[in-house]
Image (cartoon, rainbow, N blue to C red):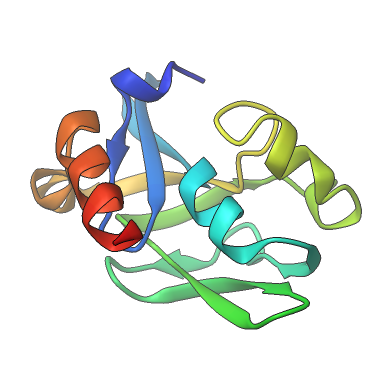
Length: 133
């Protein structure tokens, strides 16, 4: 995908990497290393179907650890065009490569306005430091 420094971030700990694909903007979405560390011991993940519509701030799946079930929130508006279908059977990938092989979904953007609300790496790092206290 990209280096963490080059990605965009939501307040709910999803990361976004936007690329041009066949004339459309496609956002690859994942969850951050910070979120994975907070969750610890992942046991289950549910992801949406290809073709699903997602909206900014809306739930598109969930991840479950031995401690809690956490919703996954979409950081963008659009249509799911790809799902990392192997990931739920290989949850360890999230801890090993959250910004690469651990991607969750790819979304063809219907509205680029949602990108304006996302944070850059420095702002996200500050949020994580605040939450850690």
